[in-house]
Amino acid sequence: MTSQSPIWHPFTQHALQPVMTKIARSEGAWLETEDGRRIYDGIASWWVITHGHNHPPIMEAIRAQAGVLDQLIFAGFTHGPAEEVARRLVEIAPDGLAHVFFSDSGSTSIEVALKMALGFFVHRGEKRTRVVALEHAYHGDTIGCMSVGARGVFNDPYGPLLFEVERIPYPAPGREQEAFDAFEAVCRRDPPAAIIVEPLILGSGGMLFYTPAALRELHRIAKAYGVLFIADEVMTGFGRTGTLFACEQAGIAPDIMCLAKGLTGGVIPLAVTLATHEIFEAHYSPDRARMFFHSSSFTANPIACAAAAANLRVWRDEPVRERIAGLVAAQAERVARLKDHAGFADARSLGTIAAMDLRVKDAGYLAGIAQKLMEFFLSRGLLLRPLGNTVYIMPPYCTTPSELDVVYAAIEEAAALV
Image (cartoon, rainbow, N blue to C red; front, side, top):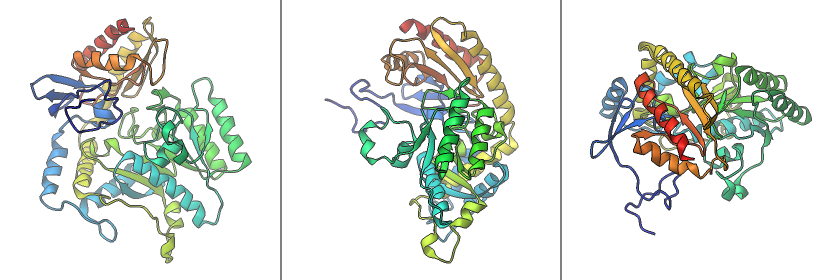
């Protein structure tokens, strides 16, 4: 084995991909290599970049904050950027989400949510310790996140470390009732503490869509049995499904909501877990043993919070929703052209996200075509990273129709690789 770098890259089989593409700079929807080659960022650098790379208001806020307050312990202290972010999030979040807990990544925001849910019932003196999750779910790569995610290639080696959850079918179009019946059966037998869902779309599970009506029904069942409803909006938040939050389309307010990725416009790591006042109150006591025991060294880092505050001002001051609406329409129009393509199955779009399944014999995350597809797209100047045989496009909101035309032309060409 030889390596040109000591770096061990995420979700990378180095035996198949020994050399990484080195990027020197970025702007808008584009990345640029050291030798000047331009690459269109068709997956928003792993679903995080919203407005585009180096969006000026966010970058200016980072530069200004870096010269004022760089880092601060967040236990017993606070600072302006964190206060601004928290207050603004409470203003725009679904009704009832009144408290904001900061963390560093999507995975940690999920861990926080799970701990909040279990602590809520412990402090109320109720014995509820089980969590319900959807099949095919993915919520991150820490132990708690893997536990509530689907079991399989992502986490098989770590099985002995994972806790068991009640798993129900995801509400696939036309089969929603199976999910509802399974969830209600779990609740009747012994009401769990919480259900956790990726609202409207299961991302890493294969870009699997389901309807707002199905999300609303899962929420209704949870409320009927006093089960806390956790919405993992780490990927779906900040416009990906066409609305600011995916939960808006179902008209529901979760008890706990997790945000990360687009919180800072995708520029710098930051996450939050929002919770209702009732959940906060369960931990509120003169007894120090009832405090919420979670933190990290960089909780609410001031520079990251300054980026998030700037991002929230961008959403307030710029025509972001209009840009998203244009991208939603452009994606839907191009996906429609692929619906009858012999090389693809289930061409679909939801908000700014589009996906289609290349017809292969070994479908799934480990489909042999995946590495070949990545290399092909990169040779065409495109960053697309298929989930096995599922090709998806999740672009920055500054993407133009002509840029999408290049992407879809390459996707059609890729069908010949099978």
